[in-house]
Length: 332
Image (cartoon, rainbow, N blue to C red):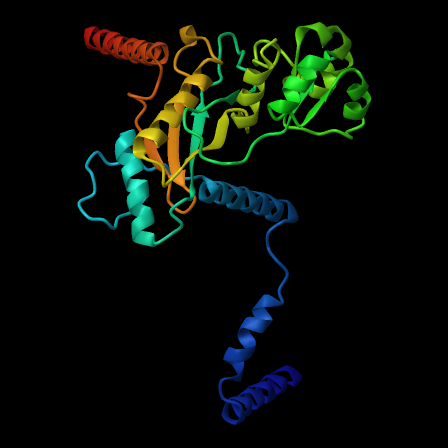
């Protein structure tokens, strides 16, 4: 009798609860269900976690991957467009220089600002060898600055020392200068020497490195006035980041012919550092002024004859390879 009475009491209390607190069973239901222990084993839960972590890593890697867009063949019809949809335009050197001058007029910027070039090189040789980064000095046909470099002249002949001083040498002396150079008490832009003193300058070989006097760099010889003019007025440049040369070549207020002449002289000097048999040396050439954007130049009229012939030979070789490949695929 106790059991039926208890059931009746429970039903009565439940009915009262529903009338007094409507919706209480629905609010308490999820909490009661969540309090139950999980039905799956711990090993299965661990596997699920590993799979989810792998998926997230794969998704992150896909997000980080850069989507490569193929450039469209047609040119933009408007002056406002998304640049990555199109190939970068290239210009003849005369056209590019005229554009730089036009940019300066439209922007009302300083008319005597410098003109710069960025040269990207192909330093690769055969059998995983490459051209070592180099530095050089070139005497441009048209000077664009009144600044001169400081040059030191090594000589023990008093007459040669007097000629060096008259032609603008910053420092002149013999073996007594070695100690001061090793201790960084003397710092100049270039070093030139006469052949008679070279055996005494061996202690400076590791210190001066590329600036050590040599006939290859035109810094060793008997013509002191000529060497001083070359290094005092010459433009010094060097390879950065293993294949890039950045340097100024002219002023924007110079004539277009003078700017182009300086550019061609510099490119010809750069191309002497790689044998022509190894293919073209200059891969990309960009010109700009201090306040303008960079303009990509066409290399046809700027490369030396040997460099241009090597570039055409490489292009023909690539075309022959593509033709052979297409013939083989067609026969197959």
